[in-house]
Amino acid sequence: ATENWEHTFYDEKDLNTHLDYIHFNPMKHRLVNQVAEWLWSSFHRYVRLGIYPPDWGGSVESDFVDASMGE
Image: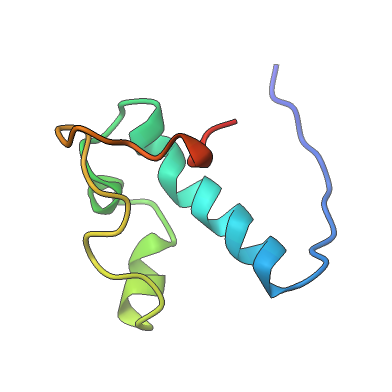
């Protein structure tokens, strides 16, 4: 079953933390090798706006995947 929840963002840091989590999730679950490969992500809009660099999140092949992005 799909679980939905509501969250009020308390400040810009809280919003950015949640955006990072959402954008990193496809890579965390090994659906893609890089965040940018998930075609349906709002990540691409944030790259165009200059908020994220195109290579944000690293790659699955790298030795280090930031565990702080996890659940």
